[in-house]
Length: 357
Image (cartoon, rainbow, N blue to C red):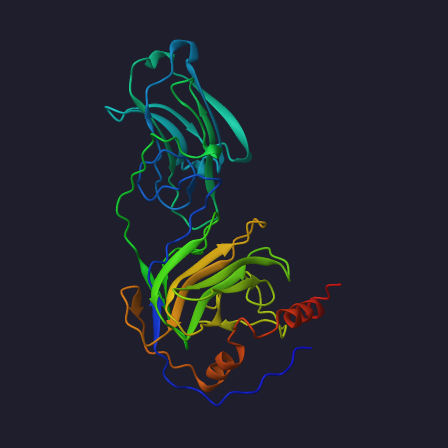
């Protein structure tokens, strides 16, 4: 049983809240592979759903003895007849499509080949299109491209040194999530935590608390750690908070957990919660978010709101926050610090609530 915490004074006061800028929508990555933005040309071939993604590196076809270019690809198929997900060989001078193969619609990689013997001496590029902008979970991946010595790429080893990456300017659309604690999140981004590596959000100001929106994970198990939030200060030690299902995360698309270990509050979005982290005195250099590399699941964090009096280029103003007395009391009693609540007690309560032995 968790110890009862003393009830704070009745709240309801206005909180000076700001939203941290620089939150980028996380991309679906696989290995050291670059994910292109809308309409961008890049030398790699993994893309997430939503709009056209073009990738390619300009290369001539291989010599005559290597006339067949082999491409291993996987991903959603012909999109119910839309035929918008495909890999294509394009004439670099005219833009003419020379070859096209649609995504196979399977998880295992499948090998496809083109006979390019007729194209000797022509400059071409390889493009991969992920052209479905509908809301869904989907992906498109390329493992290798082999056209002989002139073009033999294994994307698991990263991008070739002489390939260039170009992306057009991207319009950043945000939406306000209103409620006792407001948030400004990027429209359409499922999470700002990337699949590979951390994301660092620049700060340069002091804050009393951080409020993180989202706080769910799809298909997780109670007690498992699916990521971390690290507050990095200019001086002194960082603070690191685990994202644990049953404590700082809940399941996706379900009723909220009744466990006393859960430290999540409903937000203005009925499908997302928020958690509250206490900051120590000092200037925050950055906020680092990262999934647990030992798990395939990526926790959902969609926005960060700061309680601060500071003004900074990294902050955007939010409407006045006026949580009612009940919500203000919850914030006081459920703000997480490095010392409270004790992780051992949280873990014991999760085991009790979920009957884990």
